[in-house]
Length: 175
Image (cartoon, rainbow, N blue to C red; front, side):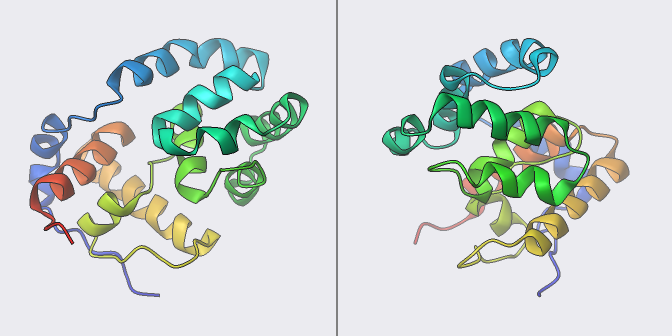
């Protein structure tokens, strides 16, 4: 596997984080507002699951809504409670419409300082192609790179995530 390599100078991470502007900011605030009650309860309700899923990709709503409420409760409860990082991410992918990128959104919001969101933009900012099929080793390498950046810069995981996304949005040529 190719080593992930940062395109942005480390001292510019905070600058690029400030340039982040994603159109789903209202939904994001709704998610942030409900995190503590969900964590206290220990699982997501179906409408909460759909809201978080829509933040990542509104286009696949029909897939998210096809999940049974009890299944969502069990899977989200497992992902929120287990200490095993592979089980956290892979259990979420059992839900209809949830891939590694969508699962990373759940982990990011509900384990905020431990996990970044993975998608094509952040991977480009790390000189990586999007894999044909995500795997735990690939995802966990990405997580480790972001954790190291957070440690080096003193910035939170959300700032790291936003910087990588914004840098790609501005610098990556459209294909």
